[in-house]
Figure (cartoon, rainbow, N blue to C red):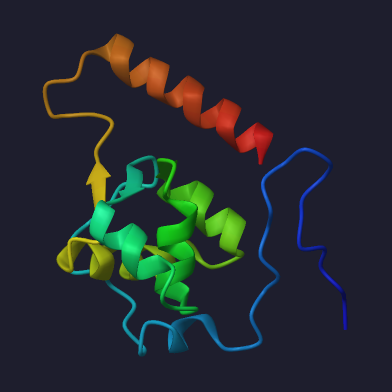
Length: 129
């Protein structure tokens, strides 16, 4: 069995070791979120979520703790070492309970320049991960 370090390289964000539980057991077998969330959408924990995060050790609490600072859905999945689909379901559940808010980065009326800037930010973020 491989040991995973709890932290990334020096000075980087902590990474959580992969869980021994099947990821979809965290979502009770659900594979589709109740709302669609883009991979680049920013997730931020609300005040109610901050209070709740400190009272639990669940996967939901881990997401809330990570999102005290806004993070993209993709970044949450990478830091928790979970499939993106699992993180989508967890974040959607937290949204329903008003423990996190999700900010879309683009709207239907976004210009080509805004879309291009977003793609650049996503590429830089992926390189940093």
